[in-house]
Image (cartoon, rainbow, N blue to C red; front, side, top):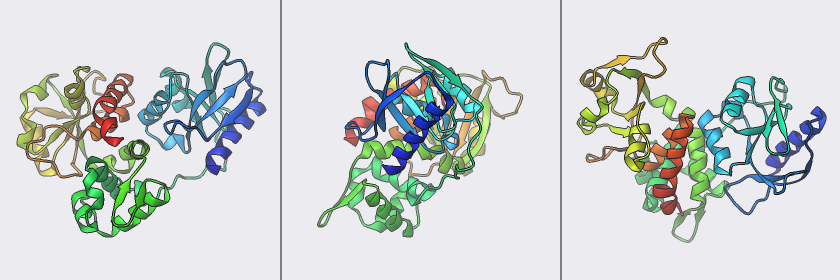
Amino acid sequence: MKKETELLEQVIYAIQHEGFPMEIEAYDVNPRDRNIDGTLKIKGVNKPVNIALVKWAVNKNIGVLINKVKFIGQEGILIADYINPNLAQRLKEEGIQFLDVCGNAYINNKKHFIYVRGNKATNSLQTPTTGRMFNAAGLKIIFALLNDEKLINQTYRTIADHANVALGNITKVFTELKDQGFLVELKDKRKLIDKERLLHKWVEYYPDKLRNKLFLGEFLAQDHAWWNKILIENFQGVWGGEIAGAKFTNYLKPQDAIVYIPKLEKFNLVKEAELKKMTVHADPQSNIVQLFEPFWKVGDTNKYAPEILIYADLIATGNSRNIEVANLIYREHIVGYLR
């Protein structure tokens, strides 16, 4: 909590130093609601504003940042160490308010309009580091535990086999889970707690720390309804992303596709679906197909990725419509069993 408080205090100092026409009357980083990181009381604004505190924001997936702020409420503000010009523009386009330590800002409410970008990062910004929990192996373990609540009390060897990781990773990841308040050990049982917050952390790191390592290629579909003509289970694959989102909500017309498929089946799918290799000159309105290797054990009868993976993939697109669908899936299919 000390680091979060320091970040917020640095941002408040930057507001004062830059002479913004906005005054912070009070702040709180000990909220009762675990889904928010704190609140700001801005002079002239009737009620405290929820905030999302993010370090190393420029290293985060844009969809994760957008969702993190939308999740805390319409008037929420992203508090960050540094927002570069490109990220600032994208956040503004999505209506995401932000403040950073360097004096970059976008605030748009009934009382204030502020937009500053281009202030350079300070030399004190450090390269982000993560522990074992959020490296590739740790993310596989957490995914397995979130998908099967009974797995937490199995032997370390069973958990490692289920998560498809080396046995030595389990002890290290479990130690960090305990240290960060996600795991408690009673007499002869373990219990995973605060699972909603753990999932949000997993979604934050999954695109860059695990999914990128599974990438098999990006292609273009000539037929926008190509996926309706494919039995994906014949290729030992499952649908993720927009196609799975459409299935779970009936609220989305898929354009782009994410498929999790074994590497040996990649060529067979590309040939059957008549997919073409992605080029830099491709039409932005094309139907893009991204292929990834599964990192979990896909069941023989499954046609769709697990719900939390669909949720993560939709958020990672950074597309507002997809993020809306992701949160429908979260509310209707995920939050119930997490709680």
